[in-house]
Length: 141
Image (cartoon, rainbow, N blue to C red; front, side, top):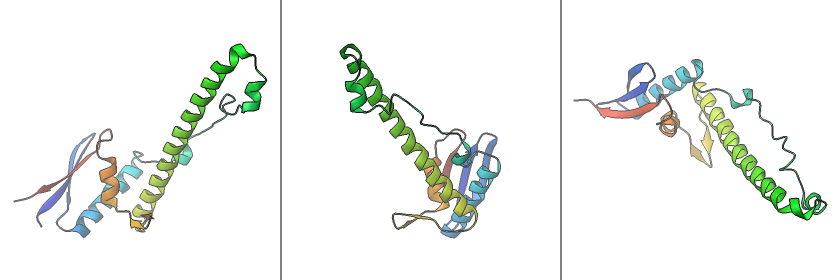
C-alpha cells in the first residue's frame, strides 16, 4: 500500500509514513506525542472544575418553601442549571477518558473501550476538524 498520512496544523503540513497499518499507527502515535508535548492535548484534571451551584442543588422541598410568585421561575432556573451541570460533567468525563487513552498510547500501551481496542489513528480521526487539526490519508503514486 503506497499511502501517507497528512497532518495539516497551525504551522503548515507534515507528512508521515502510512504504508502499512503498523506504520500508520506508529505515525499517529508520533503526532499524539507532539500534541501532548506542545500542549494541544492536556490533562483535563489540571482544569479547575466546580459545580458549586446553589440553584441546581435546590430540592423540591426547598421550592415548596418559596413564595408562589417565585416557585415556577426558580424551578426553571434549577432545571436549566442541572441540565448544564449534567452536560458539562459528561463532556469533562469524556475529556478525561480521552486523555487517559492518549496517555496510554503515547506510553506504548493499548487502551480499550467497551472491549474494543483504541488506536492512535482512531483518536486522530476523532480529533479531525479540531482547530488546527486535519488528518487525511493520501495514496502515493
